[in-house]
Amino acid sequence: MKLLYTITSPIARKCRIIARELDLMHRIDEVITTTRSEDALIMKNNPNGMVPTLETDEGYNIVESMAICNYLERVSQNKEFIPQDENHYWQIYALDTIASQTFESIVSRAREKIYKPEEFHFPDGIKHEQGRSIRSLNLLEEQSHLFKDTYNKLHVTIGLCCLVLDNVFPDENWQDNKPNLLKIYEKFQTKESFIETIKKD
Ligand SMILES: N[C@@H](CCC(=O)N[C@@H](CS)C(=O)NCC(=O)O)C(=O)O
Image (cartoon, rainbow, N blue to C red; front, side, top):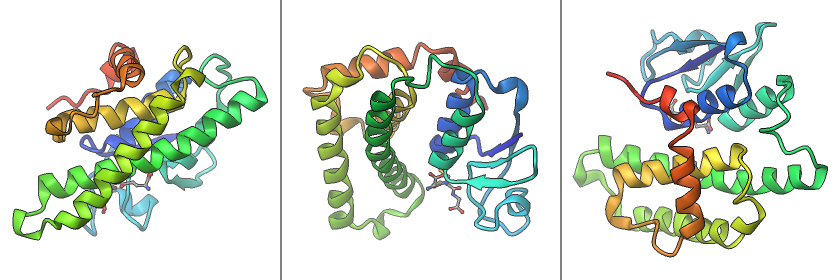
């Protein structure tokens, strides 16, 4: 398999981390691409030009991080990272869909802050996106008794949400009243899968 990513994409990093947690790196070539130009490598695999994109051994191109992570879970033999109890599997799956939407909102807000000139920032839109992440992280903290003592894809999504908030929006103090999410974030940062995928430049 080939996993196409950019070094700056936190969304692609999610797949890179999960591939490691699933012990799949001996089957995956990680390929760095650029985006946002017609001649970028990614265009051959994904006409949308977005990362992450996974090319399977059969030559199928799967896009969308959640679809890629589901595929990786399907081809992995690792039973520790994937919840084995059917009910727990869907409970985590459901919470991860919520966390993943929040993650995408945080990443796109971060991208705007970093790359868009200030005169194009839209305060009402930013507030709307902030509201999403506040409500969603509140819900995840409330429900954290369901998953605080395990480790699976939900923890990776939560960890990356916290990382981008910490790096780009430190004044938002996401960690206030979030003791369990904070513990999850701290544990996430000690994992080899996290350390190995730190951007080096
Ligand atoms: N919904 C997509 C979002 C992926 C995404 O936003 N990728 C960004 C990098 S973080 C990208 O490829 N941007 C390039 C572009 O917009 O042309 C997913 O979950 O995979």
